[in-house]
Length: 320
Image (cartoon, rainbow, N blue to C red):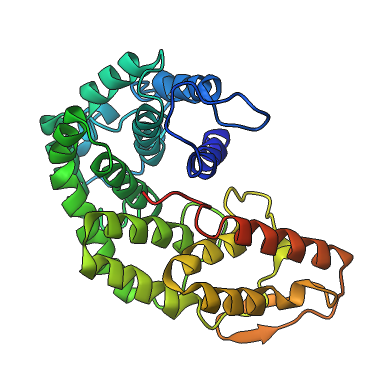
């Protein structure tokens, strides 16, 4: 599913500046209706495709032995739970952006089939089950909240119905995350699912859409605790062989949400300082470990890093 994940990140970034028109200009690099068709097809082909399936499932008894469609009936496709969740988010996003596209009816039908009240009550019960405190935490749960936020911003009767159906699962996900975050002593800095920064960004945006001040404060305070003192983010080490997220850009993307523009500029200079003529350095929160090996790649990576974050300071990802 890595290709789909990268595609989703592209959709998020490109949609941020896209005008909601079913006839967007097909200029070079534009995310137009033709591109939307391709992404919609990917999601529609997988959201109800149950197998193959990689489940992260704790068995408490023989009664827990069941196929995915029984365990998590809303999100049982797309190979794993979080991929199914962001597949549904993708359909909602595309429907909001291209409401009159040819895939619109099929997308609405797929969402209607999955996001029923009965299915989502089963999902919530599953999430609250014994031994599942870490299920899809934080990546899948953050994507679930992104789906809820996308529905909140969509002025549509079907969206309101699906959002109401999602409430038991949304409440369970928020409970899981708000219990976990205060206990997390250090951020998880990898470029894969467990990355703390990526999840915090989605969590913070969605809390603001929901006007949940308590959740927004927890997310913002956590971001400051984990990343505010950082220096010299080691861009020369990216990407790692299994990364689909950038650890350095991930933390920059969440910090631009919690700092003023001026403070963010200072912070960005500090974490990218060693990526200039002195080469790339290591990073441990609050301490500066600059590597002895100097790299020409450091300067170019710093330029790319600063320009990409500056250009997308408010649009690397859309407000969810």
